[in-house]
Every structure is written in structure tokens, then in C-alpha cells.
Amino acid sequence: MSEKTRYSDDELVEFRELILQKLEKARKDFEILKSAITMNESNDTQDTSPTFKVLEEGAATLSKEEAGRLAQRQQKFIQHLEAALVRVENKSYGVCRETGKLIAKERLRAVPHATLSIEAKNNQK
Image (cartoon, rainbow, N blue to C red; front, side, top):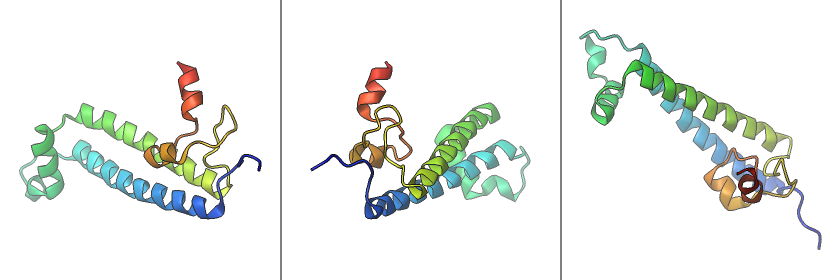
């Protein structure tokens, strides 16, 4: 039996759902970071909003610079997840861009936007 060259349609549906879940959470986190950046230092009712309280308690009010860096990283993560969805749609998802072999399911479940197998990633070092 020959080695699989791509994941089955059923497997791609499973990965698509995983990516969509991660994408939804990433977008929510991005919105929280954006609101931290744009939050004015006023003492209006927004100071007591749950979003502000979470940030205040978790990191003693992140500085706008730190929040900006985190927001940029989050935006990049969202872009990578969106690109992974495109690969699912064109059925090239899960294929290592270096070796052409399938990336292990365990790796894709942990890092759904991965484009390199562990083998190829280790060879980069």
C-alpha cells in the first residue's frame, strides 16, 4: 500500500473545525487586546467593564506598548490560521512544504497552522 499524500475529506473536516475554534478564540483575544490599547484613562463606566478588569487583574494594566506587541502577534496568528483554512479548502492542508510528506496529526492538533513536519523543523536548526 502506498503512503498517503493528503488527508481524507473527513480528516480535513475535523481539522477545519479545530482551526475555526482556534480562530474564534484568537479573534476574541485580539479584540480584548485592541480594547486595552484604545482604552482611555478616564474614569467612566468602561473602567469597570469585565474586559478591563481581566487585564487589570492579570497584568496590572498592560502598557499600551506591550498590548500593541501582543496584538500584533495575535493578528499574525489569526493570519496563519486563516491561511490554514485556505489549505484545508484546496486539500493541501497537512502536507509539509519541505518534505512533501504528511505532517503528523498530533502536530496539527497542537499547532493547526503548521506547514512543516517535525523532521523538517528540526532540519532548520
